[in-house]
Every structure is written in C-alpha cells, then in structure tokens.
Image 1 (tube, helix red, strand yellow):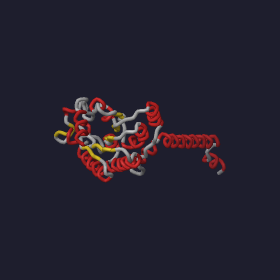
Image 2: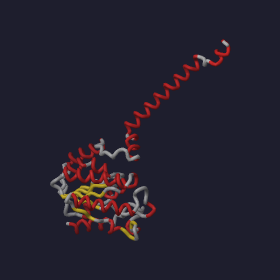
Image 3: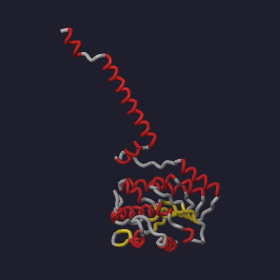
Image 4: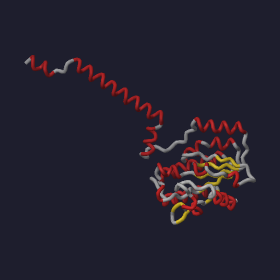
Length: 245
C-alpha cells in the first residue's frame, strides 16, 4: 500500500516546475493586457465589437501641429480639413483671392478631425470646409460613422461659433475600392445624414458626390486609383464652393 501511494504522488520538483510555468503565464497575460490597454488595442477591439464609441484623442502630433501653426501666426480666411482627399488639393491656387490653409491629413478618420480642432482654431479662419468619413466607413459600421460625425459636427459648431462651417459630402469610390461599410450605397446614405446634420445645425452643405459620380461610382475620368481624385478635377470642388457662396 505504501509503495503504490508513493508512485501516484508527483515529485516535489514537478510541482515546482508547474508553479513556475503558471507564474510565467500569469506574468505574460498581465503584461499583454497592460500593453494592449496602453496601445489602445483593447479599446479598438471594444469599438469593433460595438461595445465602445470612438473617442477623439489630442495626440502629441496634433499638439505639435497646432503649436507650429501658432508660431507661424497664420491668419487664414478659409480652412479645409479632412483626409488625404482634402490634403491633395491645392486650394490656394484655386481660390487665389483668399488666404487658404489646407489641414487635410493622410489617413484621417472622423475622430481625428474632431481631435485636431485646436489646429483649426490657431489659424483663426472665417470659413471652414469639412469633408471626412470615407476612411471611417472602411473600418467601422455605418451607424458608428454617423455617431462619430454627429459628435464632430456638434464640436465644431459649439467651439467655433463665429465661423461659417460648411459640411461637404464624401465622394463615391470605384467598385474595386468598396470595402466594409464603404459601399457607394452606404456613402449616399451617409451623405444624406451629413445633409440632415448640417440642416439641424443651421450650417451649409455642399453636395460633391453627384458632381463626381458616374453610373453609381466614382467617375474614372476623375481618378487614378479609385479613391482619390486627380489634380485637375479639384476645380469641380472649387467651383461648387463658389456657387455655394
């Protein structure tokens, strides 16, 4: 009986190894959770699952951008803000009688534009043109994009009461560039939401979608990659703004 019981009892060394391994697993899991929280991966997962809203964060690069503009002491008549579609436009050459500051930023989503409002304030514009949303639709649901846009619009209107703020429809894409919630059907639904948001806030709205669309998608004559528009086709955008004024 005594010998059989001894054989069924794990040696102390095996117990020690198991305890050490469990300790390493716990340390690794804790470190992974800490790094996920710090890098925002955990928050991103919650957003993807619809359990948390996107929150604008005033990141260091945004603070640096605002600081740089402040030191340059720019007094702009017009600000354009948005993603790379805005950034690629040389609006100063298209509106030469005004001082134009283009604050378009590659890769921007709706909450980025919200977070960069201090950079806009720094250049003291009289007019602001906002086009944003295509990147958000590519990685969020339509409903999430609408909620983010509503928060962004409210933030700009309340923070810049003396500016004329114009909300611009987002552009169509080619069929090959439809991705996630970013379909041309959803883009039209989203643009209808932008229009209603502008009306609710007593602001202006410019419909560029129908000036760039052909057969339900982005006109191939106006694009080289299916998402961004060509240099020459920015004149359509500028003319639409002139007509709005």
